[in-house]
Image (tube, rainbow, N blue to C red; front, side, top):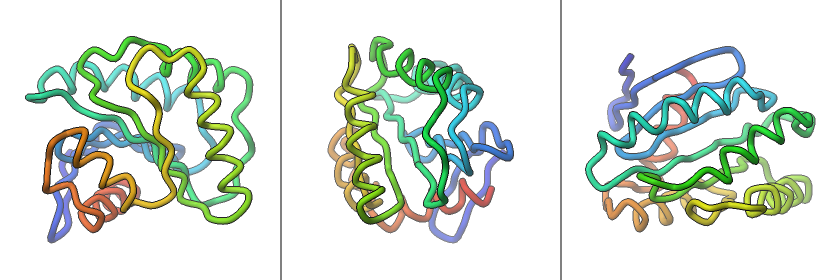
Length: 163
């Protein structure tokens, strides 16, 4: 299903109460709407490869962690995250996480995620960001796409979340 605003067109691949998997340009978004789950991780992983193989020049993957308070992922979810992080890159140009929250707790979450993603990765190096502007700067370079701007990325995330 394609949904859009006046400035971006986002394709919603899967939507549940807990997460949304969507694509915008050559970026796949896994937007959490609450607690991270094995289902969201596994489904986004299954959807990424066939979609990315159709993208000229490859694609990148962005995980968006909600501003809402959530518990740390359980052991099963952490194991799923580790499996995804250690999978070979192939057509994946890069992977990043946007932690939307601010302050000390958000900084702590970003530090934990860096350790979790960095452990045993074979694909592209993990990137943890605190703002859509930082993600957009990274994605524009990785995807060699000047149309990935902070405003457009923030809008694509909003459209996907509201999908």
